[in-house]
Length: 242
Image (cartoon, rainbow, N blue to C red; front, side):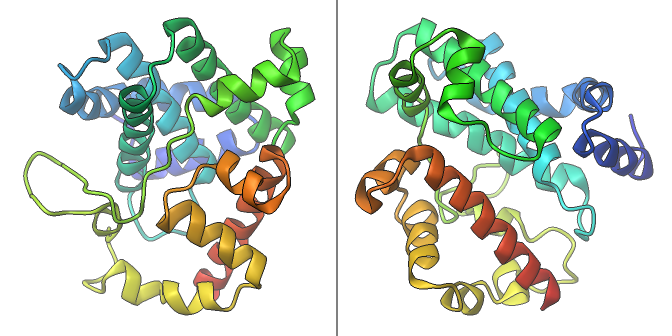
C-alpha cells in the first residue's frame, strides 16, 4: 500500500505524462477499485467489465486531481469510480447497446484519458477516428452510447449510510465545513458568463449529455467537451482563490 506522500508523488508524475506512474497507481490501488465494484455485482454487468469501468474512473481521478486539495486521493477517487460505473449502467438500462460498442467505447475513453495526459488537450473526433480506423460519424455514435452524466445530487450508496448524495461524499477533510458552504459554489457559478453558466447547469444540474448540449447550442460535441473542461478549470481556480 502506498503512503499518501508516495501517492501524491506518483500522481504528479502521471499528470506530467509518465505512463509508468499511472500504471503503478492503478496496480497499487486495485484493491480499492475492487472494493468499489463489488457494490455493483449482480446487476447485469460482468465483473471484468466492472473492473475496466472502475479503472477508467480511477484514471480520470488521477488526471483531474488537484494536488492542493486537502483530501486523501482515495476520498476523491471513489466517487469518480462510482460515477463511471453508474453512467455505464444507466445507459445500459435506458438503451440496449451491443457488447462490441460498449467495449469500443471503453477503449476510446481510455484513449481520451491517455491523450489528455500526454497532450494536455482533448483529441478531435478526426484524431479519434484515425486512431481506431473509424469514420467520424462512427466515433460520435460510439461515444454517445456511453454519455450518461451523474448529477451532483444523485444518491451515493456507500453500503453504510443511506440518503447520501455525490456532493455529500466530497465533504472529505474540510474541518467540518460542508463542501457547498466551503466553496460557495452557487456564488461562483453566478459569476460565469451566460453561455458558461448554461453549460454547467445543463451538464451537472439538469443531467444533460454533451451531445444534447451541443445540439441546443448549435456546436459540436467536441466543442462542448473543450468548453466544459475550460469552465471547470475556471471554477476550480476561483474556488481555490476563495
